[in-house]
Image (cartoon, rainbow, N blue to C red):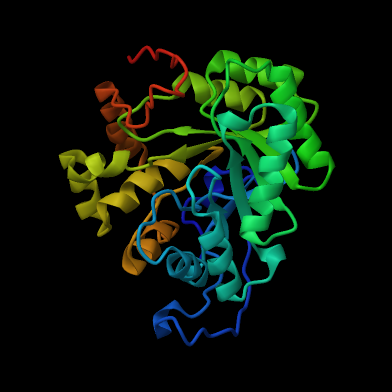
Length: 316
């Protein structure tokens, strides 16, 4: 499926890939038999990341089945983390899907408790064993750890890449100052900063900083844990396009250059729905309407035991 707004993206960013699969999985409903990828690719420092990924934090029921269903529906980007406790089930879902490893982009993360070099590398190896993979496509530092020098943790991140544990590396939940330092001291290029981003939370300064460094912003909590689904502006735009509220929120994100999103869904219908955002585009006016919602400045993920002091955005 193509993106109706492809002309607005540079050729190096908007790349459409079509595959043919003849695999049918007897344990999945007929409509979830393997579908071709339904996303475009974002390119950064040699990585080619699908713009929509399947988030696997807090999948309380049937996690492996949901991962397999996501892959069957056309997802080619699976996002997990050691802290999520879902890596084993993600691995099961990947194996159950029958997809070739080379067709999938898998991200995992090392938690801040393992910021020391030896612990970091051991955690990365543990993740690979849990996933039953030889490598991940993207390995992230999950949260910054102020008690350990950045040079040590970022050095370990680079070592994980150079030793073949990961093809690409990046960070998550880093502030502007942390990004500048990380880019300066990391021996390997950073592909992304995965942060909370949705229409209720401005990230203008972060977007500008990542653009300067050729990095992708990967948005988690893309619908503000459901808060945006009740917004009347989102509802009006959804009605205009005949789309679900979540689809409008996701389209707003990925229609911005170098922005990816990793929504989570607990039902197969919502899994398919979240990926079905490439057959329409939002008008400039609709993009501005949704962007204006950032004045609410609502942050969802702010764990006091690990969150940094977040940057302050000046909202016009």
